Image 1 (spheres, rainbow, N blue to C red):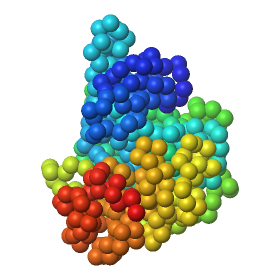
Image 2 (image 1 turned 180 degrees about the vertical axis):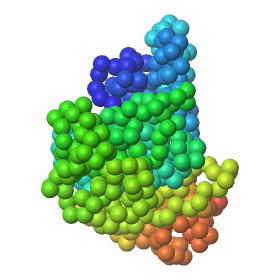
Image 3 (image 1 turned 180 degrees about the horizontal axis):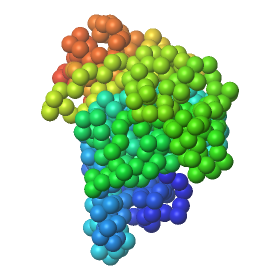
Image 4 (image 1 turned 60 degrees about the horizontal axis):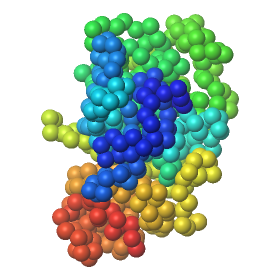
Length: 442
């Protein structure tokens, strides 16, 4: 998304459900995102601040209306099914009923997690950000979570990578996302050419849309990684059309990749694996994540378990980046309004550190996970579970948690129950908002 003109104009102070609209944050061809604050006092289940994404699904021509509703339904469907730390969180959906404002009447509103900026905006300020490898590791982690859950993003690019105040990454804008049906998914025939693999630049489109594979996201990640690490595209050309022509020639064997010599050690092979000429030659998301983790020195993320057939609710999450990697992704690097840490010590599992969260206040972290209200139960796994285990073991001296392995097993549940009993909470072994607040209080 980019700045105005706006696809949907909403005046400051406008009420959408319990939310009061503030300033515009970003806008694209199909939607506009506004900052919002919670104006209702009777909704303790909602955060105090959020981002409202307005899609003008009310007053358009029938053809436009059908298209916009399809885009909105795709995003709602994905965000309603998936909850993972590297995907932007959706709190609610609204449909506006406002006949007095025809331009807003019937509009769909997604209530989303509030980000502080985008990778696109960061690259505009700092073409080769120092924290690039750490950001790419998190982006790759989100891509793996998405593919593991059976979805293709369909439009991975810097504008659709959001950065939260703590420096963590969220993948966003799932208007083009599609759920896999076997090896393929069917997505709208829209994409960003510079990040589109050559086989999809001029695709065959039927009544269900374009057939896409997860390898399309892998290609996009390869392009994105080259842009983040070098400030340039991996295929030659001064314009988008010239680069698309080069990609077509490359796919036919008439053009070679010309990767920048400025790429850090290890990245040339990774990007080459992403940008194979054919989809079959591209690396898978899980193997890609392992390669990126090795090159960046990030902690190996937990393996995602097999999904339960027909009973799956949300994907488990992958473990956090190594604390020293995330520790470098500070406000000075991002030039965002990141909260200042209350300690100069970088948080590690053995040595948690204080930090200030814009929404929840001051608390302890063992890796900048940013988890305050994400619900964990036995059987979950990933970065939030790792931080839970670290805080129990090294901040609250509940050593019976066992190994810090990112797996919420029976031993970790027993440790949670012990902590909840000490803190005077319901000892149900479920880590919800109240337990997280207690965990982050020494």
